[in-house]
Image 1 (cartoon, rainbow, N blue to C red):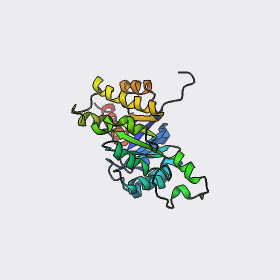
Image 2: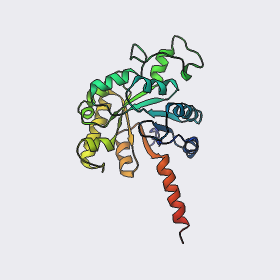
Image 3: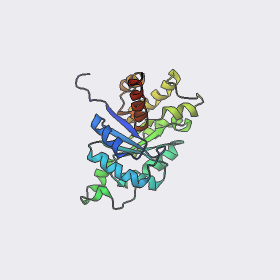
Amino acid sequence: MEGAARLRRGFWLETASVTALELGASAGFDLVVLDLEHGVGLAPEAADTLILLGLRLGLEVYARIADQTRSSVQHALDAGATGVIIPQIEGAEAAARAAELCKYPPLGKRGMGYGRTMYAGRDRAFVDLENARTKCFIMIETPGALAEVETIAALPAVDGLFIGPADLSLTRGRGLYAATETDRGDHRRVTAATRAARKTWAMPATTRETMDFAHGEGVDFVVVADDVTALRTGFAAALEATNV
């Protein structure tokens, strides 16, 4: 649509691969999501380096953190991450506790400690600027979170919601995610909640059908690939191309 903002696309980084991060940036991706929940070898020390490199490469850098603890949130944000994506939230109360860790008082309860965000110094505007810069996305991937999604979306420290289609399908008793109309009904409830609260939302989108759905619902960004699958696909393509 003429005049509309270009849809931002990202990729998951499942391994602590500097090369994959560089190649993703050079391919033209807008953002990367470090998968600290499921990724192999993405310890805090590796994440710190990858956050720095990703930012230097011009990417937005989000961290899907491993859990809802203060240390997981603050390690990512103090390293300079654009934002955190918080998984396995069971309801509005848990979402409120986790989101508060992402913002400095009075908006939240993030602790003040010296990190990369302070290298240039800090002044009286630092807290407000940092609260505005950092993004807190709550994952909606459990029945409890979906049941209270309107309340979660309206929380002051929450910037957006991130749909977790695979776990939401499993935990809602539908088995492996198949992008059914029932799945889409759950997803539409999430998108409606964000519109009502004037917040943003995001989701993985690896098919044209899902991309069309996401774009039509006003998605903020989509995550369309990951480094492990890209590597496997490349190897498989090389074998196919040289098959005799």
